[in-house]
Structures are given as structure tokens and as C-alpha cells.
Length: 329
Ligand SMILES: [Zn+2]
Image (cartoon, rainbow, N blue to C red; front, top):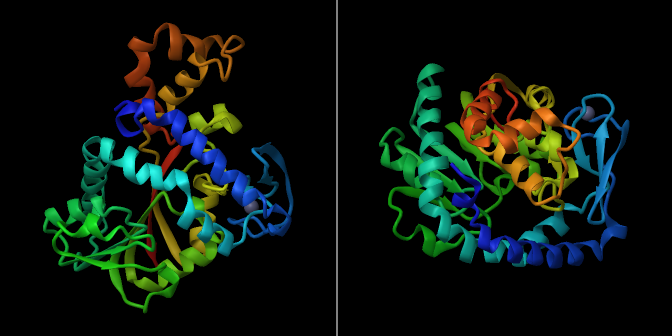
């Protein structure tokens, strides 16, 4: 899979332009941003990691989670997402162009993996809930497998028309913390926790919706993965206020354990690390002149190593995209 298949290159500049407008708007309130403890270990010892676009990123001195601090309040974040020009553009232009590719390269492998893990851990498959369901693409594909009796999509910023042709999905337009408690067997949360004002509160709400022994599948960036580790503040994924929490395998495990989960496995199935770093080097955003090994793999001998290098990163827990499987105690 190439990045352009899920994020068309020709829309990149416009995405960045709109992102800048959104960011400037929320930064007008920066005096009211609030200081927080480490989202993983709750400690208050941290050091400056870097500053970017008016936001301060710090690294926890205890568990090495990176987080935006001070950060916009929950209400500011809500308003940001409800009015974001970039989100609107993404929904209208980026997503439709890349939907087919996303299904093929991201969603279907995810569906397959989750069914395998449900079998492996022998969890009942009466009900599954996807939190932050977006356009319902994952829910639609999981419904098609016929494995679950009930498929529930939770999405506060719901585009109702996107669900009209998707049959057999229960749709709830609200935040997880506002929904009446129920007990489902499986919950999925794809690329959500990094956006949350309080990851701990979020996981506690998730936990309330899961039956005892139920499985949670969580995906989020891995700050110790290859592309985030090499690119740091030059990565397009390390942008606030979109992403404000950056965990790694140990720190997300710590948080999950403290929220009543048993972590069963952490994989890094990312497919784009090498290409993302290569692109930034080719664009002159970073220099690999002092990194002859990386220059060889990512530039000079790219055709030879591109697939095997990425596979090596993914299978050794070194990709920047994590999939965590956890069971409610
Ligand atoms: Zn910490």
C-alpha cells in the first residue's frame, strides 16, 4: 500500500492550508488551555519534547509518553471538531476518493485480524461496538461477515446519509460517556484515544460498555515506532490539536491495566513508516546525509528493500501504528 492510496497527494496542500486555519482559531484561546498530568501514568514530571505550531509537546519523565501540555479543554476540542474546515474537507473530498483503497488495504485486513483474535481468545460474538465509527465503513464490513448478531456504531459527528444504505447497523449519535450502559462482547476504537482530552476517562467509559471478559481492540500511534521516532516534529501525525496523546507499547499497557483491562497482545501492523520517512527526505524536510544506512534503505536501494524493511519494522513492534488487544477483567 502507498500513502497516496489513502491520502491522495494532490489534496495534501489544501489539507494543510485548512489545518492551519483551524489551528489558528483554537490557539486564540491558548490562554485558557489547561495543564494535565501524564495521560498514561498520571505523574506530573515531564520535560519539553518540542514546540510545534503554537503547541507544547512534553515527554513524561517516568513513562516516556509524549503529550500536549497545556492542552485545549474538552469543550474547546468539541468545538474544534464540530467546526473544523479540515475535517469537513476530509469528509467531502479526501475520504470518498480513497474509500475503496481504505477498505482493501486497511479495513478488510483489520476485520480479518479481529475475527482471528476473537477466535483465539474465545470471546462470544453476540455484539460488537465501534466507537468513533466515522462513515461506518468498518461496521459495514464486519456486518457482512455475519459473525456478530448486533453491530453498533457510535459516532457523535454523524453523517446520517452515509449510513442509509448500510443495513443491519445500530447507529448511536453521541459520545460514549453519554450512552446508557450496556454490555457488549467486543469494542473497537480506531485512532481515537490520541484525540481525547482524558484517555483515562475515555477508557473508563469504554470499560462500562464491555461485558466481563469482553475484548477491546484499540489502535493508536506508537511514538517509539520508526516514522514518529525519526521524524518527530516533522511528522504529519504529530500535529495538535488533532493528536494530543502519544503512547508506546509499555505506556498504553500501563494505562489499560489501570483502567481494569488485561493486555493480551500489542502488534504494530503499520504499512507506511518507511515510505513516510522517505517522502520527507525526498522533500528536503529532513536530511539523511548523516544517516548512510537509512539513506541506503530508504533512497538509494528503495526498490530492493521497501517491502522487506517495512515488514521487518511491523513484525518487530517497531512500526508507528499499534493494535492493542485487551480483555476486561
Ligand atoms: Zn507517564
